[in-house]
Length: 189
Image (cartoon, rainbow, N blue to C red; front, top):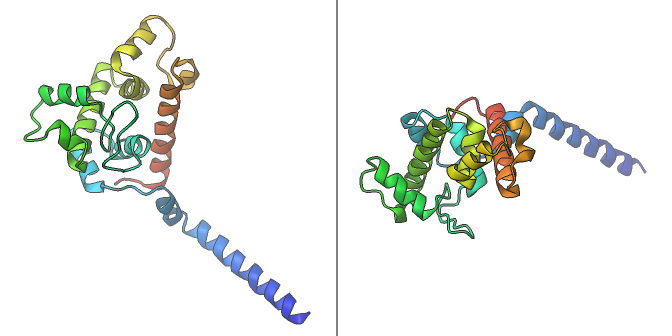
């Protein structure tokens, strides 16, 4: 009986210690649950394209979960899941050195560079509206403009439920969830 009581006390003590450590080390726990890979590539491209590195990290988390060789059912490739046609268009818009469409699907620096450039371009097209830009990253800028013109959606985060594409609605919600989560856990990259 005494051994049993002693074991219970030891177990309870260990549980209290573990819970205390989790609360004290919440940054550590958050960073282990929500890790960010390729931080140097993200930071470099965030600086080059005047974007928050945590936003790029959130997009990558949702798009590929940091898997370089990810390919979607629709054919989007790489860490930031760029459609080959979009990558081809991006490559014609600016000087990206020797980067090719194939590189965007296989190399972190290439995929992050093209994806970051595209996010900046979408933010420019949509007057800096992040929510519209994220919706356009997923559904395409033409589709988002169509929704705005027809009054289907006003482009606000509070009215995401009005986005007619469930995939796009869910995409924007997930990116914003991770973006806000990263902002709480990481002050900066």
